[in-house]
Image (cartoon, rainbow over all chains, first blue to last red; front, top):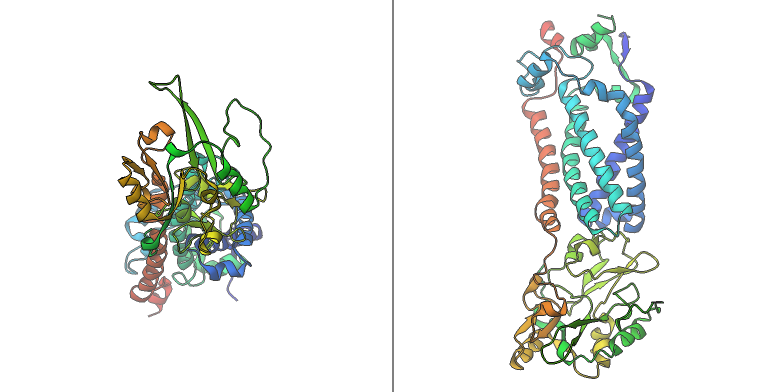
Length: 201
Length: 259
């Protein structure tokens, strides 16, 4: 068997599962509220229970997002010349012929995606708290309502892209989400700067 | 939100000029809808309860304004849900069936389906929805149960002066216009209100909103954001499928070396 290297710790894997699971359920119940989907409401035994589930999943999502900060935030804020070049070749996703510059542990697309999740994540969390706890304040309610919905649109667009890139578009990637491991020889090709930094090149 | 019941749409016509402020309508409403009393304090006005409440679906708003003839004019305005045709509460409500349109054009509610999120009161231009002790929305439903049985709403039934009239909306409006009322408040606002007012004075004098509208953010959300969420999701799923078929997944370079 090929030599493997650990890309994600158990800690990251479990937290990502909570973040992803709560996010998908929140989006699903969100669509239920937005478009009055009785089929979704029925799964939860009605819209009353669905609201309770949606609210508490929001808490799970918030805690998980907070916890994820120490995993990814610092790296997601650092960009170099290779990252700029990565954007110029669209990460190699629009053509297999272009030369993709050497990457670190994460490519700039992933880093920007994380920043968007953090930014709109906290927007949707704070506005969710507004909708939950400031029901008697009309200004807070209307402002929260619009922020919650703008963030929702960002999430329903960004998250499926992330899911596609993490599965079908990059075969073998899903395994990292499940057990955290990837073959060392693949890592040397995809993440040369990371492998160099940990001295396994 | 135009509905197909416009032709036989029913309405309450309020003629504040004929109102004597007896508040029999308040009592009749409480009686028919079996609403609990509210403990209030004397705050220097006959207006009691001071505002609409979870157990007060209609109130008479008392106001004193300057007059040229008398030292003061005392105005009585019967307030309740306006039963807008384009109802902000119905637009924003996330729970299907919690707010619904009756065949007579009233905005009615279903307690069981209300999830108590209180968004409706944020979207109401007239600050009408209130909440019961259970946190669920409650308001005037134009006595939907009575009018379905060909009776008039309880407030109208008890009004001794004809300040409250109930009937075909169009007929009420033309009758009031024939009687010489300059302003029919709510004739056109928000697609036409289900509670309309016949004024000779400026409606503003009675404390009526001048141009009632649904909050801009709610209209924007309903018109653009809601469709955008579906188009956005559909768009990225389609784009991913096209990408997979047209360009294909990432390939390891070593395969090229092998060839």
